[in-house]
Image 1: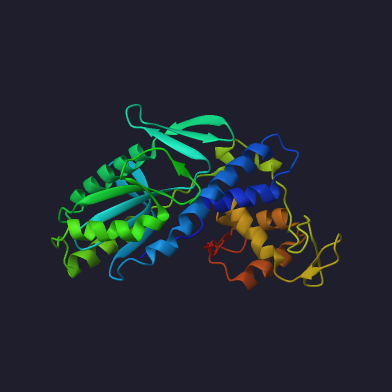
Image 2 (image 1 turned 180 degrees about the vertical axis):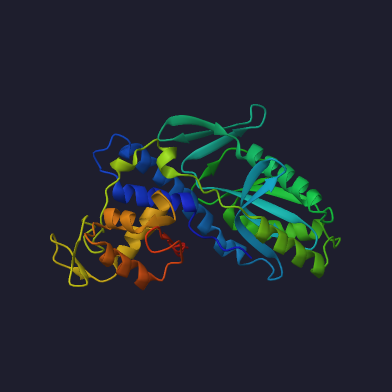
Length: 316
């Protein structure tokens, strides 16, 4: 019902790494953060194979972020069945983990080094509470809500016996158990359709400014069109092409990715002057032609016109 797409913040991290000088003092930290985000996303994707074994009539929503009164909460995977709802908190963790339920801490041991994290069991329980309250606010019939922590990395060594923590490969058998335990139909087809529409309509993307998140200045970002072949910035616009002086390749559409970077880093709103500055285009008429060919929607008259960069196709 809601596909698993590359998270917006992950896309923003990629754009930032493309356009921040590698000598910048924050580059190593941003790169580390990106690798963690990417590992989490890859971990979430890896459970999709096991989810494919579930009944076709079950509704699956990925990365849903809802508002419960005054708190937003996000679920990696939400599964709605006629008899129960299930939340999966996916963790892609290397090494061995031990979860201390008394302290609410998860201890990860990797290469002889121990690190402490908040227990994912606390996270998934909090999501259950939020979602149950959200269902009540939506006047949806009360249904059991179960939550599991799913370990997507098969090499993770789990040193805990809690039945709410499972390897991804156990998802199909766990659902067979749930189906036998929760047999009473709580949601008829009409109610499920209504709930599905409510979840989809209520989802709100967490669209934070990555420039503000890392406390960067706009002037620190590298401008210009990037070569799709060797990644050199900037390209030169000549005779309808973007030409790379380093590898000699040419491209007609390399500017579209540059404008997507602008949207991810700064804003979906862009003026002719900002297009010229970011793409390194000299004349306003040339910038106007670039924008017109992209068919971006706009507001305002010719002088004060603001264009809206179309949503980029999120990667799966």
